[in-house]
Image 1 (cartoon, rainbow, N blue to C red):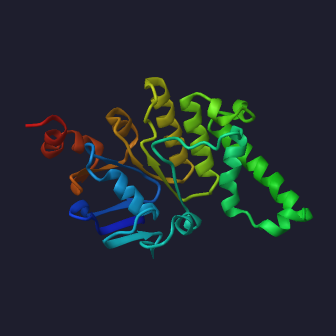
Image 2: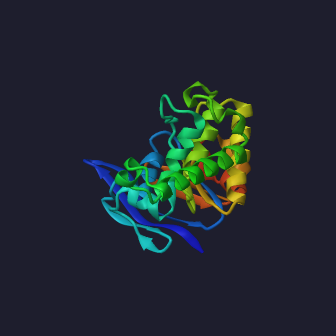
Image 3: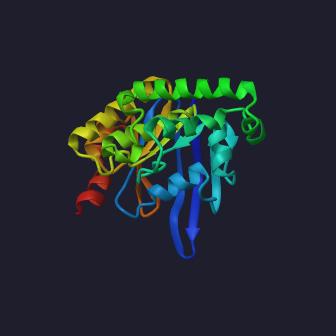
Length: 251
């Protein structure tokens, strides 16, 4: 069953057709990758799916609901979380506090009840604290919970970012170049964590340039070039696809 369906999606910026009639589906419980050379339209596609951009035409369907035109926070509330290529940590906050921010999407306490210190808001805050700590330990960074997030190594910050996204309790997690800026060891660790997330029952859609990571962890791959889908298949078939080889290596 498809958790995400993209149908005939278009996005134009003036005369530039950044995404041109792209269609694909993501089955629940899989890791699906979107690859392509620079300028292929990968990030634009992610922005369309997550609500940061509105399609010129086409349909984005998440868990059976049309979501094109909805705002990002509305889509997030439906169960879609996203990370970004450039890690975004809240300065002056610990790793634990950064993850706690993600939990508040599902919180019930409003501004007024929190300001008045209603007793039930303290219970919710304790639950948020415990859940955030569990996620840091799950992603094997619990020992750094009380360290300023911006002072952590790059790979550790990526783990904090993943934990913060998981705190939103998503059914679909969008990862925008999770290996960007990481060394070989850190990339392997992130790949292992992504697989661990999938094994928790969370579907993953990622954009990535590191082909070794993509081939190691993906169930299926979509290939974009100049805004168009040129291939969609299993990793082994993509590796041997003449059109894919041509766009990466030339004639």
